[in-house]
Length: 110
Image (cartoon, rainbow, N blue to C red; front, side, top):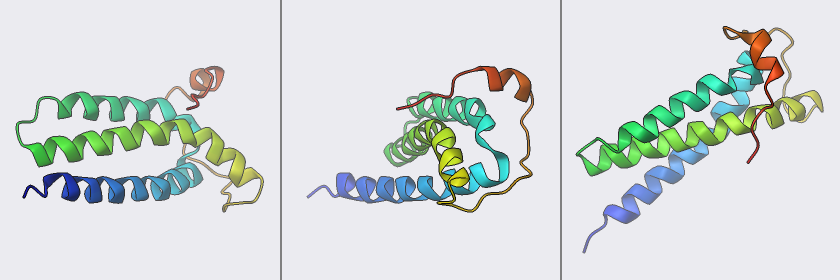
């Protein structure tokens, strides 16, 4: 029997679960303007997973990259939830480089 699929599925479920946590905390401390950097890192990880020979490493790097891409689309929605009082709100955020330009871009939605 080959249990690789079950194990990689459980590990991916764990990565997705951590994705919820890092989106909430990331928006709280950094703000939603970091979404292009997070999305870029996620895309790089997904593309990088294509070049890994080890199945475990490829699967986990791809799952982490996909979680980052998904999380980057959730930053704006999380900012709205925090402003509504559903999650803790922090007034002082760490702004990314190019924040003025990024504010003009529409935040992605899935």
